[in-house]
Amino acid sequence: MLTSLRDVLHDLVRDLYSAETQLIKALPKMAKAASDAGLKAAITGHLEETREQAARLEKTCELLGIKPKGKTCQAMKGLLEEGAEVMAEEGSPAAKDAAMIVAAQKVEHYEIAGYGAARVFATVLGETEVAALMTETLEEEKAADAKLTGIAESTVNDEADKEGSDDPDEPEEDEEDADEEVEDDEDEEEAKAKPTPAKMGKKPPAKATAGKR
Ligand code: FE
Ligand code: ZN
Ligand code: FE
Ligand code: FE
Image (tube, rainbow, N blue to C red):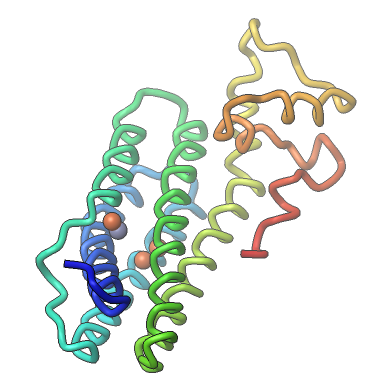
């Protein structure tokens, strides 16, 4: 039952614990499925952090006097199902990597929302030790998200674009049209995969916001 902010925090912490434990199982599979060496390394590195994050949540539960287990994060279950769909899909390694980066970033954004709220609630409730633990993890999640953005922009998106460029239905984009094409794109994921900084000779919109969160 939810009758106080403390109840909301307890549920949120247990939800995050479920999310992290699901990730500990899923990340090794994602690392194996990734083709780009940098992406593989980023996922493996974040797996190590994720184990620490789960431990931090156990410590959090101790501080709050609750049990960490007993809740299933349905959102993470769904996000990981989407990730598994991408991995099972046929296609070029770079295009699959680009799609996997999107799936992984959706996971990070979900976690950022959860830890951000948990930190605020803990602060309001005077649980400063809990708030500090939440901040630590929150910063790791933000860094993981920024790292994925960097990998997409530096290698994977360009590779994925090259592989698709011999498609006769898709005309080569020239420098002048590049901006417009991104804006006209109704699909956000496609738009994310489109910017080609090298060709455009200037920073794409995604880069301007990267790391600001
Ligand atoms: Fe996490
Ligand atoms: Zn969750
Ligand atoms: Fe959830
Ligand atoms: Fe994460």
